[in-house]
Length: 302
Image (cartoon, rainbow, N blue to C red; front, side, top):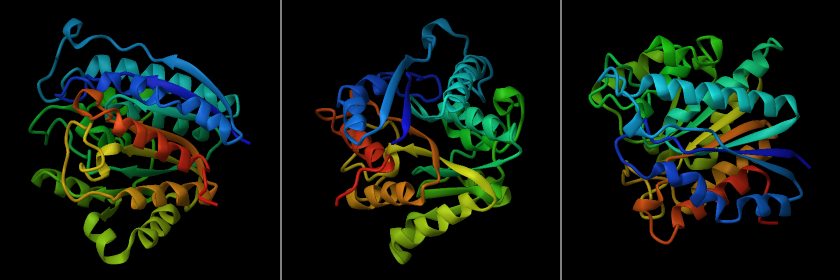
């Protein structure tokens, strides 16, 4: 039995589509906590991290919109994830846009850094999230989260938790990507992260890809953080996302990814992000997200 900590992060400052702040509520009403308990885990839901309304915030730099309030939210999430790990719990951060990962990963990385251990990272996403304020066309921070975790970009965002470089590129696997900006492609290539595109999944099969990704994130690390953007799944299955892109993971491919994460016994923390119920149909995307979290936490077919 594991001890699980649920954290809601109703953050919608990182993108340009409103509604993702309701993601934590949409996921909770699927009965997630009760369903995790049914797997035999102890669960505490600590409520939501406080997030200011966009209307009450200064946009700031047009190339990194709302960077200061996003950094503040991520600092609080970092502290709460860090505290949860100290209590022996596995943090499950529910968003909210993907910029929240700068906080969740910072909390896990800080926990292991104090023990002189490294963290592995599996980043499931249709997009690279590797832009910086210098390369972005939109200024949306949710498209820069991974770059900042690697220590690139805006100093305030890259220094959440008090240090830069939460993960090393050699221990990062970007999975399911199929939509990269031209300048972002160069940044991804130069970063040294391990990239597994949808073409790789098509050619090799998802099982082979996840075997390699888990090995990458496990090599010399104390555990793996999974950051799962629901838009990695094909939009025919996950309609409630702000940046849909055709050609994503199928239902069973997505579940196999999470089942293999559970089988690895390396999971120490996980995010589910970018669920937008305003764009959804009968909460189907939140339901899918809950099912995938359950698979990552050990739900088995047999």
